[in-house]
Amino acid sequence: MINVLGENYFVDLDEVEKFLDMSDDNLEPLSGNTEMRINIVKFELVKMLMEVILSENDDVDDKLGLRTKDKLSVPFKIAFNSLLNKKLINHY
Image (tube, rainbow, N blue to C red):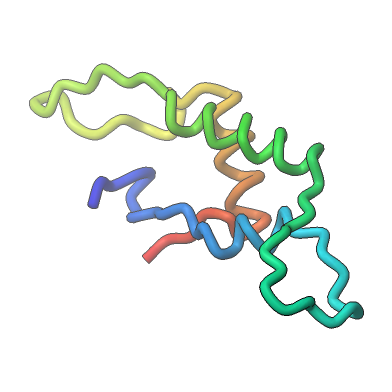
């Protein structure tokens, strides 16, 4: 695992699926029904936030030490905090 901000984080794919799912719980599922309705706005926002987190570029020299929280970009901080708040990323 790679350390991020002093902790080991992972994307909780089950939580992402639950967050995006708009299926009616009141309706009984049909036999063999594999359709899933998603909120397209939430989908696009989660996709964009994940792209920001996964594309954060960092040139770190191991001899110079760990990167501090102050050097993280503002988009990374907002994306990371948003996903953490919605429990779409968690730490071990």
